[in-house]
Length: 594
Picture 1 (cartoon, rainbow, N blue to C red):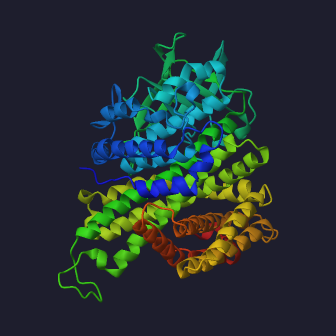
Picture 2: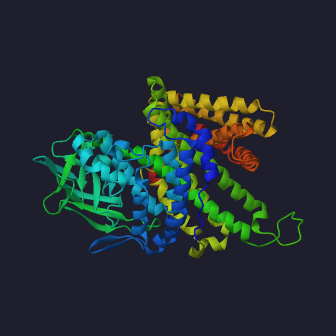
Picture 3: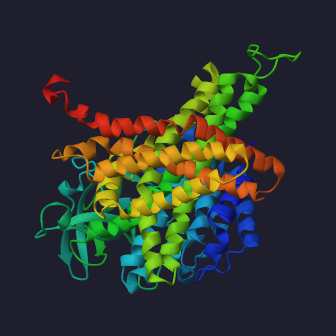
């Protein structure tokens, strides 16, 4: 019996009203994304998540993936579940129809991906990496490469990986040592890559590795990296599987969580060189890989929402059933369950309000990329590209950091029962812990937000977003409902903190260039909290206008937003003080004195 039920009501609300779906469906190529079709897709995805993927989550955690002499064996039921996933066409839901995909908007595919991640994060990681590889080949590959690989990757018959880091490299890809030597119409790749998600497995007959490597005469640093397609099995001219390439999995990592997902150490070229095919131009590999990484960063941020939702559902069920103690002020006769305890309610509402804010922000970011790709007006395309680019590090950084906090709250609500593995609450905390690390740590996202997304364009994208937030504040303040007015006050104060922090990042740091870096993590969290409050404020306006499935849903939505405004939004003021007045303290202690 699954303990995960897709939160379809809230998903539909966000897609239809905050996306909003009507605007996205009006874009060229998205006309088939009608409300009826989207509802049907969400309902069927929810069934697969609940009935097929969720029951395997615990099995994947306890059995794990196993490295054997014949490769990597996934946990019991994994292969059958993956076959059901592929047969249902789920791998290609957001992919180009030219290569067999369904071509649905990112707004919709984001919601479907949330279900996979909530139901079984370890399982969902394989399709997630494949999506990024598909996009990189589609955007930067040749016609021949697209014809050879994309159709089977879109269907899910083949999976894809991203091979960046090495034992000595970590996040510093400038020191990548993997080599590429020209040989006729291909290159011979040699080197070692680590932390390769689904680098080896038994789910598909072929795995298409995208590998960063360096040519002998390439410039030093990241400017000298090129990107190569290195298939596990070479592909014959007729599309059939050819001989085994010179690539193998040396081992898989023993991890804190996501045990069902094999994280591989990959060796290339032990027997003379693995055959690789250059994508695009030489020495532009990192640029091309960022196409894949940006896709992955949004997807990983979504994992923060998903794991928070899964932890919330389990904690809520436990709180409704667990009888322990008499709450202060409780007047009833029978001993109530712990959901009546004030602190349990605080924790549950903290989880619920953050999840709804996070979900909305992730979906709206996806919708921005839909508009950036399909809007006919060039200025609007550019505006939405700036919006999506600005939101991506916030989605990746804030959602994953908050997801860990929510999974931890889920353990706390269980009390001692949460600290033992039998209840399942601990798994979500263990699984969530990786999300702030891979595809660029929170520190990397924060530096990106400060440098590329704030300072580089002089704050243009940030000011555009702040203006939209202020419009929501104004609209809330104009409502007769006192709850909307209260939310307007807190959100308005949060927006003002953002304006002051933005001004400090752009102008107020003086001669010490280190200060924005010291402030960057707080700056990212500040953006996340205020953006989340903005989305909940938009939701309140819509509910007051009658949006939402029923009166109960609307009332819960407004009350949840009111809790967020009262309990979460005030953190923005403290973060501003840390940014503006506390950043210099980071350098107050000499490194030798730690």
